[in-house]
Amino acid sequence: MPSMWQKDWVVHCKSVGNGRRVLTYLGAYVFRVAISNARIVGYDGNHVTFKYYKVGSRRVRTCRLAVLDFIRRYMQHVLPKGFMKIRHYGFFSGKCSISIAQIA
Figure 1 (cartoon, rainbow, N blue to C red):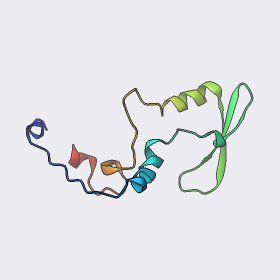
Figure 2: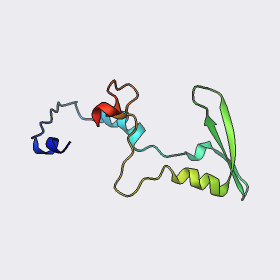
Figure 3: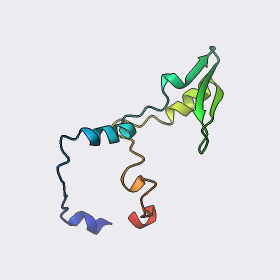
Figure 4: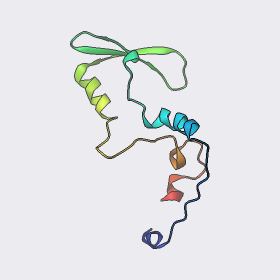
């Protein structure tokens, strides 16, 4: 809302020690890569095969994609310069009880 830009904001911060635990927690989300080298099983010049877990399953599965399809999927995780991906923190967290509609 435009009226919100007119209000003074007060940020409440508390010391959390040296911050090592916070960096460890947030580091898993902020600096995460789209796919690690360990998950890539093979490449034959035309196809890339990689391991993944289906949501809700503990069984490892493999997917074989044409190189251009693999690159297309990978590039969907690359953000424009200046953007940072933090999906599971704050109001984007799955545990947040406030809906996006209420925030907007």
